[in-house]
Image (cartoon, rainbow, N blue to C red):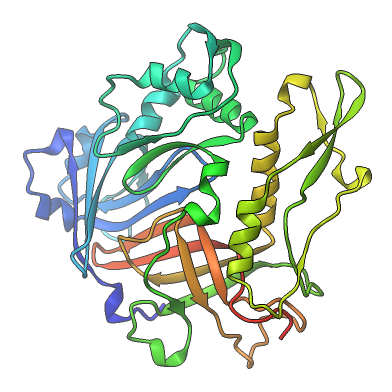
Length: 388
């Protein structure tokens, strides 16, 4: 990839708790590659750090070691992230300098994945269970806690012996239409209804692949179309207002009417008046979903699954110059122009320019100097009439 001047990083430092006696500039010069992964569908933040180790400084570093990463972009925006090492490998090298790869996981997840508490709670929501377990903990180093409230009260909450606390919370929250996820600066537990488009922050820079934007901060370096809504689609499909669910316990059908007004309003506000919005009428055949117990049938859970399927209708990836202010669950405006020489979009596909939600974010730093951010984006509306 031919990197523009905006892909440079101003400062990148790492600090190991066991190597505090070494100068951080020396450790920075050891960095060959650092990649950090954020994903709204996962409760964890992971990273891969590859270093050259000519002085064998890393021989004393062990699994569980605490590590701090400090990043400053060329616009003097910065953030700090703390990780624990969970795996370490020696890699083949073309010279005499040893190369080491450290696989990292965020500090809260490291603790919650190693805890297997044997304790039960009565008449508690899952968010209250989370608050009880984490109260007074110092695991959220540098992160702001943003904890929403789940509404469903459980008669009896017991973490099974064969599950980690994080695995249990992630699974149970999904049943309640909520999730744990992390941004660059926050540890969040949120109902999905609080994360619909009208509640999210929009990034101030529009991203474009126009050729005259090569030196522009929002220049798209490369892009990939994952899903364009179907080759023959000329409408933006909205989520269903009603879902029919088969309850395997009572052997009966139940109807769940979902309040999708927030999604509809957000989509309509970003679509040209000449576009078509189609409400899907869900038939029993297409909406048949089997749940094992009646207690799992909840409006919030159906909202989460419906909303996430809606977002997947149009999905693209773009690579842009490293920008500390980019974050998951942020809205970005994209102007994506088809390359007519390669015909990368099928004829009749929906126009891809418009508003998107960042659902995955990967930050990559090469040789401690070059900084590129890759975004996975899911569309919430179009800028131009569909089918034009």
